[in-house]
Image (tube, rainbow, N blue to C red):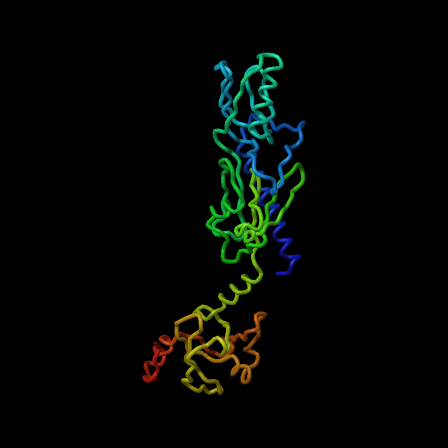
Length: 320
């Protein structure tokens, strides 16, 4: 996959994931809750900003006013970032730190109702979620509880998958009507060469697939298991080659196993096929020759299967 195609795929993944996340957030909101449009979206920090928890929709807060127990409340932040409190009504706390929300409530109470009110705000339960997708072992949605960094979030998915590119991990963050996409190198983070960025509610993390690892997987998937019609075939990756039978078309069947497997196979060599039936051989992008056994009227078999088909005629052949 070329660089342009890869960027396009990642962009589509990010946009799709953001759309799904927005839909989920909308469906979870109370039908009687109006979404505020007069206030702009709270500015989200960059992923490289040091962590400080910011209040978001669906967070549950404990509000306590010293020596005024009637004003104490446990409230949930609505989808617009507001909470409702006695005396002062709706207060916008979305996007604020807990300390800033505390100061805002104190200022509103002190303005008209109380003299020097002592207000404390604490987070009871986080409703903020981070979506992890792409080449991770277990794509998931995590709830932020206090603080969550990129490496911690990936670890909670079971880690980067077999094809994951640890050098290109996207963190997509919505700010107003724009999506900011930052790319991080997990290897550098884990080695201490780069800081471990904090994640915030609504963030979407996507791990790219590695082109090199993907190519290796494609090679591995083409290894000779019974259901595969065309295989990697190169004397350089075969071990313990031993000729068994010369076929009518001039090809020789060999007994061998691959350097990465102990299973013994019986098949032909691509180099031989290229001389006899060239159309049955192709060279992949990895450089290996592949044989299309169906064009030869043959089937790649394990040694045991081949022996069974011959009714034990080759008694001197060992499949061990």
